[in-house]
Image (cartoon, rainbow, N blue to C red; front, top):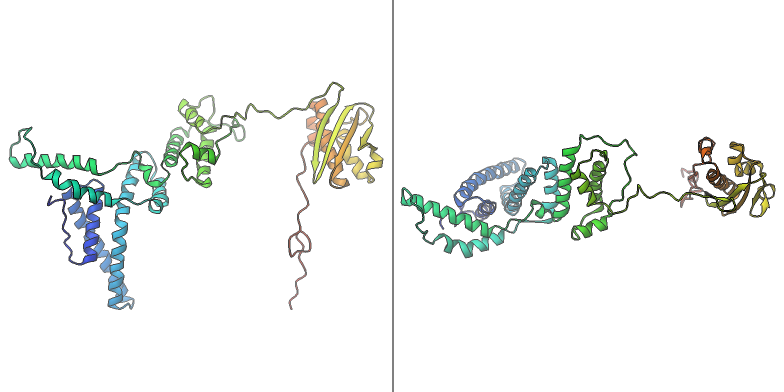
Length: 410
């Protein structure tokens, strides 16, 4: 019991409190009483030396002795509060690095999570020591083995009792990530990083050629890990690792990787989902839809003699400008199919230019249903890709979208 009831050497109350805190933290992380006492003396001497140096510097910088002493006491109090957290942080660092995490990643987890969100419960250790240590360590050990001296026998029994006692007092979490506040997410992140390091040299698909996959959303992932407070930014870091693993060539992807990825997939195979293809109905008519600015056009194309009707009117009646008429049937002109198809179009929204260019895209899509081999020619003519540009909005205080009022000096 004398070894456990540590009596501080310091007579100064703040220093004695710091000494006691250091000793309890060493007991908490598994040191024996003798080892904790020795480590406490070393740590105390080191810390007091740094406090003395800080005190002397403050005096040299013009601070009064009274103010410097008060600041020294405040530093000792702050250290007393933070020391147990630092010790548990070191234990967690060691445990994370033993699991294969790099020093930088382990340090990031400890800095972001342990200090901010959790602190060790040293009061639990103190209460357990008060209730159990005295009656447990004072019991006489039974004679089960023969020892050369009585002192060795007593020492062996005390060590055995100490180990049993510490196993009962110290609550060991199932995972070192317990102290992060998000243990399941942290374990997932660590395991995925370890898996990536293991298989990072395997061949991957060229950019953009990996099979498409739907990953779970943040909310779905939170439900999977027990509603842990996982932020979107941190979940995106996990998704980046998943995408990198998914880029491994599927022909040689290890089963371990595929099983891990399956846990995060949504169950929808996007590689099997195809865009709805256009078709020619029983009357030989194909449909194409195009948009430009705020205009929308639906073009019905059928084999014929080159007749074009827009909202029930001829091309010349509907579009007054020659340029708009040329834009409306540009897909047919570029492929020399003006006299081979009839076009019946419905347009709405926007102005004449927007409607004409929306009709260009709609006619091109409907024409591709009849003749898919025309796609390269239509692409060269600029009829396949939609123009996403729109009028930029006017800003408050500006004359137009970007034009500002004239600056007046006075």
